[in-house]
Amino acid sequence: MELSIFAYVLAVFAVSGFTKGIIGLGLPTISMGLLAVVLSPVEAAALLILPSLVTNVWQMLDGPHLKSLVRRLWPLNLGVCFGTWAGAAFLAGLGGPYGAAALGIALIAYALSGLAALRLAVPAGAERWLGPVAGASTGAITAATGVFVVPAVPYLQAIGLTKDELVQALGLSFTVSTVALAVTLAGSTGTSLGLVWPSVGGVAVALVGMRLGQAVRARLSPQSFRFCFFAGLLALGAYLAARGLL
Image (cartoon, rainbow, N blue to C red):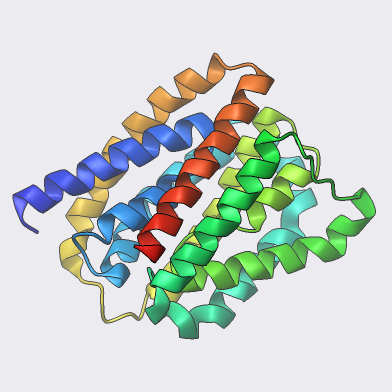
């Protein structure tokens, strides 16, 4: 990898790690879109696997709620795995314009509803069947676009988690999505060993950015966090839609 591209890759992971530290998501979405500018979509997806996995595992373990979240969210995460693997046939569509635009528009609509304080709510009794549906849908979208956000994030927002529980639940869900996507990418001919060191460098800068973002998040009130969360989703959605449409 050329030095200029390597520097660009590190900058992308630093920015996406900082965003993830604040709102609990954004690393795959930002990284996938910006890396695909200089790399093939499959190379970009392969490059973000390690940074995404490490930062998500860190986020997943950083809190006291993991055991209860695993018990509560196993239907969602099982659905993510099946949806990702079932959608593997669409892997060539990673970064495709129509998929990116549709995903961006969906994020924009959800973010605007959140900023307008329209709260979605999932009854506790519905989690057992709605979780697998949301997970399978998220997995299929992950296989097609390399982005883990929809509809897992709206679902997790709707089941009544606190700020810290939500961030840790996102780490759990994204860890499962990353592993499932890594299994899908394992046999891809678009990846190479030349991506190993750039990916390792991406881990280091993403962790630094994430720690800085976490320091910012710790100072936010729940209301400020909610605003930053939905504003971040709105920005991600606008970026994806613009990339797909333009």
